[in-house]
Length: 92
Image (cartoon, rainbow, N blue to C red):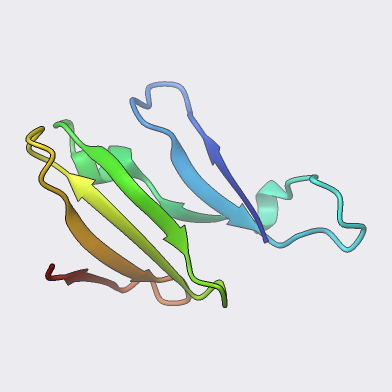
């Protein structure tokens, strides 16, 4: 996979995407095959948000990330199943 970010007009935060790596191993992004992994704009819902950790599992099946929504640098940890979109908050 190719992993990348993009900011669209009106976005306050960059969106995180991936798409399959081309057969020729180029860095050409196929926007028709891309998958939105994380949209901090939607998660912020007009409020404050800070993305801390952002890590893809070695098998490319899960995304672990942390978010601060208070501005107090108190982060919450989440794991997203990329095939289903299911998100689980993990205690720590």
